[in-house]
Length: 69
Image (cartoon, rainbow, N blue to C red; front, side, top):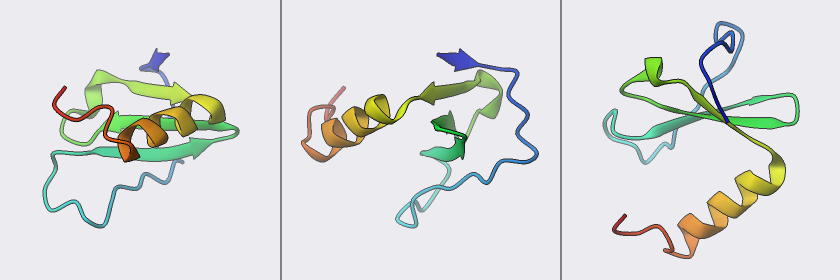
C-alpha cells in the first residue's frame, strides 16, 4: 500500500552504504511495517510492507529476479 500521510519526522530513514548517489530507495520501520520510499522524489509516497512482503522483496532482489525490469 502506498501512503502519503505517514508522519516522516519521527522516522529513521536508511539507505545502503553502497549507494553513491540519490538513485536508490530508503527504508524505515514503523511498528511491524517496513516502509520504502524513493530517495529522489519523496513526495511520491511510502510503500508499507509487512514482514512477509519485505522478506519476499529482499529475496527476489538477492536472487536476481528483478534484474532488468
